Length: 382
Ligand code: LLP
Image (cartoon, rainbow, N blue to C red; front, side, top):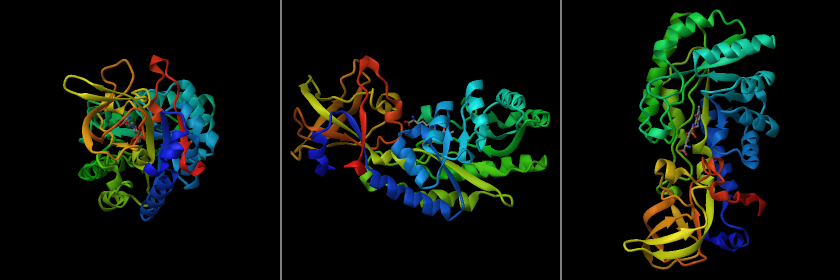
């Protein structure tokens, strides 16, 4: 990355830099490892919705996992086939549901009984049948940050298993929806592979509840969540997809002809993104030395929101390391990228790369403090 410093000098900071070669290599592995088991992969658009990134996913034959009407529209616009689009979200509006209905998407991942009824009603008005998967809350601990845990009974996502009987009795009355699958997503940045084994065990049990009712499920969607190495990204630029998919292959009990789907976001795109920022000032406090950069929580909110620690590299210095707090310019005390970080001696004008920002970086930006919107550049355009 240091080699790119001259190129970066010509661009206005802060900006996002996407390593498209790494993305290609990652997708090669995703395809190879999921292909071994015949799994269907939907890319979680919420992680990064930039068109060149989405185009790559299409090139590799991935489907799209969307959580808003606009994500569905963006996916269709760039060329995902509606038959490969799933649509989740606890609060889909009528307008958003209609977008899915009008485009005949693969499935709505339905998160409540009332949503099921509304989809039925809207489909009836159009005289069509909507395919749905029930998003079930399996109550499995994901051992990740509390803000990105989704599969516990206390979380707002999905339908709790205790409500399944009610679902079954309402479902038979809803003639404009077809139940085609079940869906699970228990959280994000999950690095303990045992969690997925536990999920499989739960899913196997839950499947039996459907079998008892003689309900055939065409597909099981296991969501996303595979974590990445934020600490030392260069050691694990491509997550261990082989082990990940194998856990499901070894532990999931499938019915004949049942399809398995996944919704992967972070594990595919996080490592290919970097936030390039320039050092504006150095400032000595009483106990700390601050490196003040021109990117802030407006370009990467993960440290402020989840106390996430992204690796930072100084691209302009190879001097002896010192301890710094790397902070942004925003008027918020939470606008800190890293505390007590070892960086080569840094000076005004140095370029820093904040690593692993390809997922949930650019998509979560804001214009707080009336900031300019940072641009994105792609390595294959240079
Ligand atoms: N499927 C559903 C239903 C989801 O809600 C999510 C992520 C995914 C798939 C993709 O999960 P992934 O493979 O990327 O872990 N902003 C947070 C992460 C929020 C995740 C939201 N849902 C962060 O920066 O850590």
